[in-house]
Structure formats: C-alpha cells, structure tokens
Amino acid sequence: MEFQDVVRHRKMVRNYSTDPVDPAIVDLALRNATRAPNAGFSQGWAFLVLDTPEDVRRYWEATAENVDEPDEWLAGMMKAPVVILPCSSKAAYLRRYAESDKGWTDQDEARWPKPFWDMDTAMAALLILQTATDHGLASCFIGVPTPRQDAVREAFGIHEDFDPVGVVTIGHPVQDEGAAGSPSRRARKPVEDLVHRGRWGH
Image 1 (spheres, helix red, strand yellow):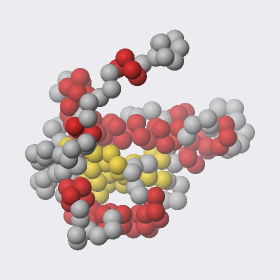
Image 2 (cartoon, helix red, strand yellow):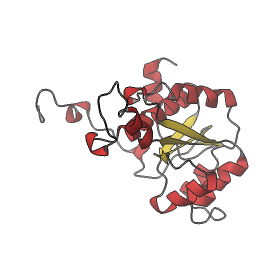
Image 3 (cartoon, one colour):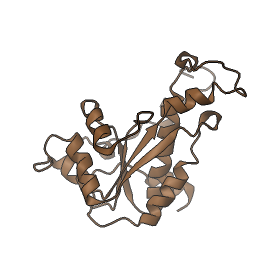
Image 4 (tube, one colour):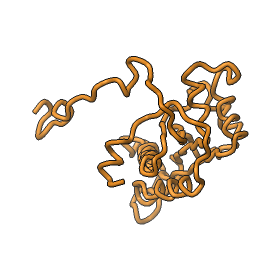
C-alpha cells in the first residue's frame, strides 16, 4: 500500500478469524516498532509477543472474567492469533538523561513534563498497527485492565523495569457489521474542528 492508503484503511478491529498470521509480518512489525521516537536514544521500549494459542489464552485468562463464557467483544478479540504488549521503561529514560552528555546529575522524574517513555512506546505501537494494515491484516490497540496489571506481570514474568502501555491484537479480519454506536459507525470530527492555527479557537 501507499502510505496514505495505510492511514486511510487503518482502524480498530474487534473480531478476527482464527487463520494464522505470517510470522515474518510480525517480525517486520517489531522491527518497524524500534524505529519509533525514543528521547535521547534511550531505547526504553520492549515487546512481549504472544503468538501461540497457549500464550494467547493465558493473556485472556489473566485479564478477563470468564474466557469460557465470553461476551461478544471478548469472543471476537480472543480469536486474534497474535497479542503484543509494548512495554515502556521509565528507568531507562531516567538513567539515560543522568549521563554526562545530557547534563543532568540525577534521575528526578519531575524533570519530565510528560512521560516520554510511555509516549514513545505508544508511537512504537502505532508502527505495529500500521505495519499490520500495510499487509492486509486487522489489528486493535487496547489497555490492560488496571486491576489485572499484576496478574499479567506475574503470568509472563515481565521485568520490573518495564510496564505495559497497552495491548496490540493482530489477525485476519472477518466480516463484522459491528454494534450500533461503535467507533466504526461514528463520523470523524471535521479536521477544521481539531486544528487550531496561531491561537486556540482560530
């Protein structure tokens, strides 16, 4: 696809077929993800890849109430054969900016007006989503439920320096009309309502 086609066709998909995903596409998506911004070349992201039926099921068991009697949303999402957790490392950023070439002598988190470790990792996730679209695959970005964060960390041994910023599911799309009021049924706001030039409201 041309880049504009990727942007235009990318959307969040919540229902998948069970057809396997080419591992080469997953590997490419991960390589592309490492091209995301990372302040000071901190490279403070990492990716937990779940691409076997057993590992994928373990993820849903750790986060869902009842995987044996799923609702419509969960049933569709559970069929995705690939689940990727992009994880950010605040520690990597704080350590990097305490090095001599950055001029800071401490690792004070207050120096950061926004959590760039999470922002950069989210941009890495977007590159994964775009790569999936470019190869005709469906994908979705969701959060890890707050009460289940510890269960996910324990289930997969996530390193203490890293925190999942969300979850990317990847698979082949199925024809799904979707529920009324779902994002795919809602019109996008006009660009003119979202872009402010020179001063907010202008």
